[in-house]
Image 1 (cartoon, rainbow, N blue to C red):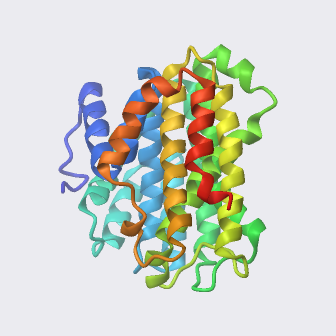
Image 2: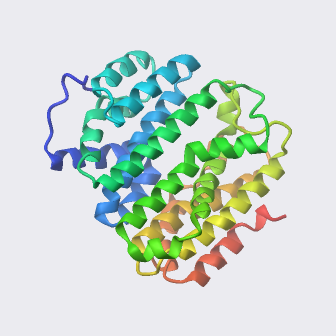
Length: 324
């Protein structure tokens, strides 16, 4: 891994090559879905994902105190908003994470200047949307850093709020970016903005349920206290229903946007169905979708997004275990 001082000044082409390469290293799922978007949208969505992943990396650092995480998150937001040089974030962050084991995520942090250079080649409107998303996510996570405990979140309302700051805000971002690049999408989504929040929340609720054994092992729970596993599955199912409504509103001529959203949605549906079938599990690997399943569904989305009926049938059949 290069230190910030060793990272060479890259051309825009090389910057984008790095973004594409590191995306594949830190998330196989999003490396699969993001290239489905039109190129101008792919660039800004991929960039936002990497910025959000930096925030996630800080949150995931088990040996950092809540105060350290909050401090690093504040430095990161200042760098994104250009209130401070990016170097004021990178060096302290790498130093704080010297015991962190994921080398790809450390490499991403060392290349924060590269990621921000790409952001600054995007339109002013897109940059504003990304800055809003990163600010809300970072500030929201900082708030919840101090509330991490083994018991869980206070109630269902706090659970939904956590899912908003972690992922619902990303649904809002996607809607803004898509609207900036597609007038047809903008017109279709007018008055339905809340569905974008539900789309992001559904994906996050799936992740929380899937990762709960590992979270428990490190003394953390993001599930609400005194809410049963079955009740959480029902809440997630309701969010998935709203998510499908969101996807069906995407104009059919915007095949890339539809497929991007439907792929993420479908993987969440199938994962939640496995969780519902297993009742109890000791590792997320037990409910993880196989690569064959993921790639088969990837192929299925190519023609499924052309038909609202096919997408509805997929959801009805794949979510049966969530409605028992």
